[in-house]
Amino acid sequence: MADRLAELQIESRRYLAAYVLFNQAVADRLGMHPTDLQCLNLITIEDKAFTTGQIAELTGLTSGSASRLVDRLLKAGYVTRQRAADDRRRVLVRPVPEAVRRVGAVWDELAAGWAEIFADYTDGELDLLLRHMRRTTELSRAQVQRLRRQP
Image (cartoon, rainbow, N blue to C red; front, side, top):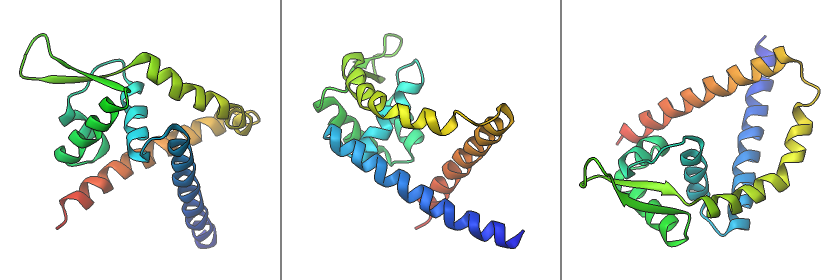
């Protein structure tokens, strides 16, 4: 078991590095910062608008960094800012559908390779992968919060 865990740790490092480098390449292709790309990715998953504070929570960024990120997305035409109808003090950030489609086109170009990876997995294996991804996502969020709290 110890050998398998050591192997898993090494492969996890390779996997994370490969994803970070992949994300950088996609961001470069779109002329974006990698964090901006992932923020746009996250806010388009949900069918709702976000405040800058919610974006800070979602990304683990400070409120100032989240504001600058939203400024960059706004300047590049990926999002709009609108006052909330129920509370004019709140400003909501919404993705611009046409701009999101441009980003989606790059993902679509790359999607075939991803689909092939999962094509021969059983439902049970896919369930295991989903469980793993959800658990690592939660652990990552907790670790980001822990790191942000440390001086």
